[in-house]
Length: 192
Image (cartoon, helix red, strand yellow):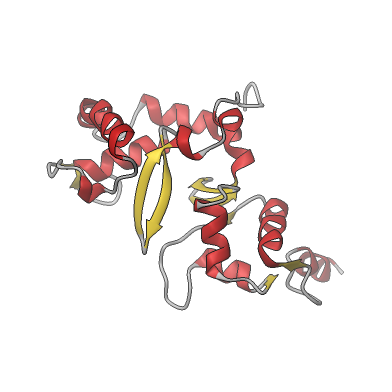
């Protein structure tokens, strides 16, 4: 019974419970989030999860919900994840932690304002659009300062993924991608 309950709850037993674009939202809201992994062997994880649970799912639906309708956001929830944009305030404590420390923090802080100004003037950018070829220590290996700075600003909530071209992220100011009342909302929990 427990096994059947869990499979049915996950939309993996019986007929489809979720359908179309609204079904994508309904499933993600029920699940809380789905992991986003850019590795694509036979489909990306988020797409496979949704395809198996949402009748008539297309990759375009997820793209639109993330980067056009902005009802979903891709951000960190233990790992890269897709969750409802309305959950943004719950991650403020993690953004605060990233503001206080990051690998190559001094180098990133030195270019942060320059990047903010460039995006404010030109719109969304990718790492290759910024002339910052210096290498800095980053999570998996040394990387270009532009990439590390954009990712750091994404972790802190200053930037959001505006859109993607393949696996290349274009970053914009988060306040232009996330509704004002959600972007400026306080963490609903006073402590852990």
